[in-house]
Length: 139
Image 1 (spheres, helix red, strand yellow):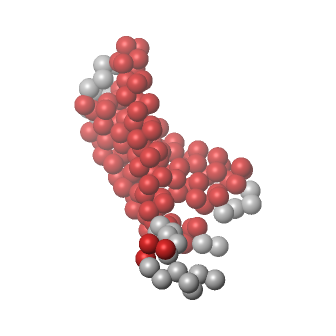
Image 2 (image 1 turned 90 degrees about the vertical axis):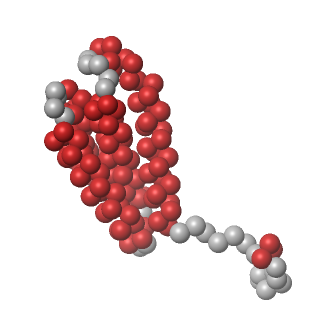
Image 3 (image 1 turned 135 degrees about the vertical axis):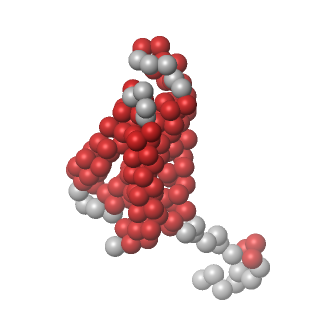
């Protein structure tokens, strides 16, 4: 049917690689959460503790962890029949360490170990999501 298309400008566009889908989804999710954190940081500093570099790092690492876990699990749930049940059941237990690390890093006087934990957790899930996404979305 598309045999008559001869020039590259007339060819239909090829779909983007699936790995770009998870990368773009994670980046957009991180940016969205980062904008929310930027708007909420003054209120956090007013009511809880002053916002310093460790708190900002905890915000950013927690955002990356939630985005990486959420994007991977959303892709898993999207190809499932029980997607409405599967996503919360998988997401909530996997995001608890991110919440604990983020809260610990924002209230501890020496947040180094919490930030290291968040960085390790984010790295593991980002690499896991990137490496397994092709297999996750194919049925």
